[in-house]
Image 1 (cartoon, rainbow, N blue to C red):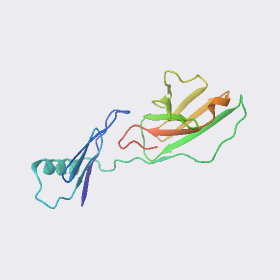
Image 2: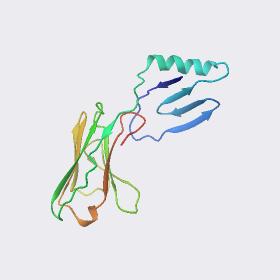
Image 3: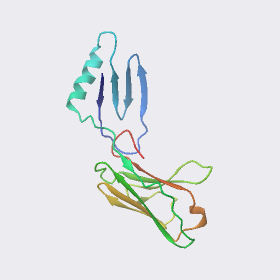
Image 4: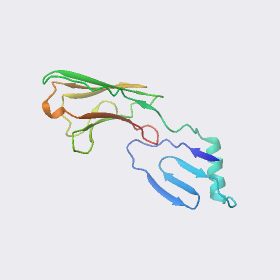
Length: 156
């Protein structure tokens, strides 16, 4: 038996996890309770009650076509991303160059991060989002990922 609580929080907040006996508490996101072989404590009963009054469909699906794209320097390319439910513009885009960690480019669907060049632009709303690179440069080669930040767990 498993209960879950969906708690919507501001985007881009790092979750904190604490494990105690048979319960896992992920503060700022989902609270997952596993069935305990012993009697239920008052805290567990409270969390079960909260689970019964909250939306339990926490995970939002994110679909991004995986086909590679080729573009010549100076050209334009657009990447698309679709979510299973409305994420209210809580969409981020990341670039991962070969051998490097992902780098945030766009947040809030269309706001460029501080050092993101102006050739990168994000758009979209509801369940449909896109990232466009206009005037592609050789250093733009890499993988591009979208990530919804409306509901935990964050999905990409």
